[in-house]
Length: 155
Ligand code: MG
Image (cartoon, rainbow, N blue to C red):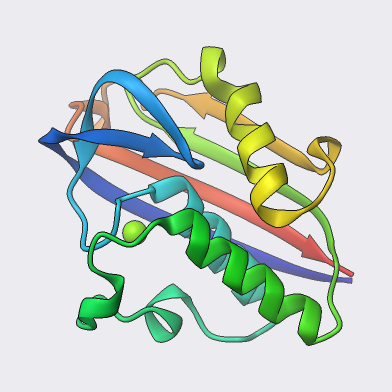
């Protein structure tokens, strides 16, 4: 068994859709990023790569490379899972905590779990997605962006 920890944060940016775990969240600003800004998937990718000691999202998909401009993070996740399987790993479980003042995550948690399950070709029972606010503290608490922590266990 190998465990990995992932973290990511992005600032809100108006005029684009908010995508979390491959799910478009309505009535909320999107996130500033080179890719589609799916902060949740970015944290999951880093947890997976960290568990396998295979680098990080930046080394696999550099934001200086125009190939990844506006990239669908779901496709990046698919390719990382493919690489891990090739290296002999299977995913035991993923646990994610999303920290933001808005949107409220709970109504979307099961949709996001189902989306991640499809992208990673694993059962939804292996994926947990939880939402928290930062109780008004710091930039995330001031509603400037979203931060995500993820843990992955590989077998
Ligand atoms: Mg990111």
